[in-house]
Image 1 (cartoon, helix red, strand yellow):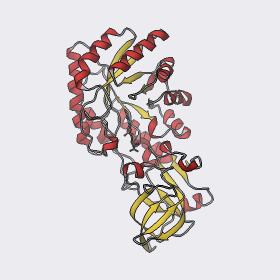
Image 2: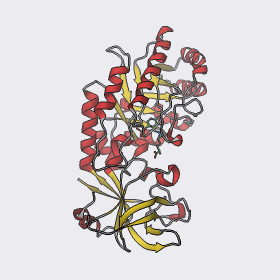
Image 3: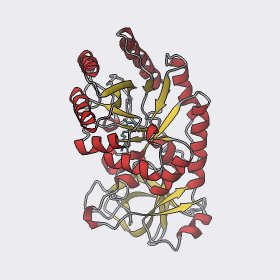
Image 4: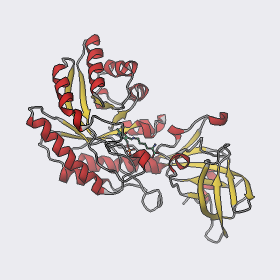
Length: 384
Ligand code: LLP
């Protein structure tokens, strides 16, 4: 609930802007760290979810590692102070320039996604006179039961080395003098709320780990990726995901010995709930079939509803229980029909100038903003 205190805080601000609640961020990170530390698990924060400087420095200060998917993200994590030996670098299309950046910083591991990529990293590492640590990303063919755009671990997805190529990948790794295989990497998708998906992942991970160990290859690092979902429907009731239940699945079902490390790459679960997009009503309009609430924020600030038909809770800031409600389609100003945040949204009857907040926007919100229509750079406000 964004009540009158927030109304007073936001009133003088130019909209739209991202509002980040740093107290909630801190509490979320502490809960995740506590549940992971208890089991000796390592968390690399997935920068792709949010790379706002202030957010990153809070995450870095808590001792998290970083999970990157571009050379710029690797460089950014180094600049913010993440330790190079806690940085992983994934992605199906790493360019030579990006690989060189990561080699220069001697990162913890490349999560390698194809045989050709293994060969290129080996070649570039040889040129630099270094040995690169790699984890092999295996496509486990586990259905994440999430939106098909954010499912990554099925045979039809472009990610990871398919089962059919593993034999060859293992041979290439043995033949490459400048590559050191430290582990295996998996990631099945995002916004996963059914813990059975992670249980199925553990079963596959155990199989593949055994496959390598039977061939005499020791697997030190088991990286199971990220994907833990958040409650978009009830951000006030469930502001912090159940990290205990999540880590417990892996603790229980992953076979490992005391020397083997378990690594995670959480993004959304750590930052989604601490961010909201705040905007003003520009106009109200009653169409032939519905009422429109036209905001000054659009798909350029928060792309998820337009791109994935994703649900985000929409509230009027400072709403009162006594307010009369109306059904609105809440839209942005962008010249696209897909620029809509929600089609049947019950809100207090609103007028020009009212503040509206779109919740649970801290992950894949600001980072996916664009300048389409030559929109202004996105602004943000923090509360401590
Ligand atoms: N590791 C890898 C290899 C990934 O591909 C991803 C996310 C993560 C970790 C972090 O996943 P998370 O814990 O945040 O679920 N833009 C979409 C989400 C794309 C996720 C891409 N990969 C959205 O707005 O829902």
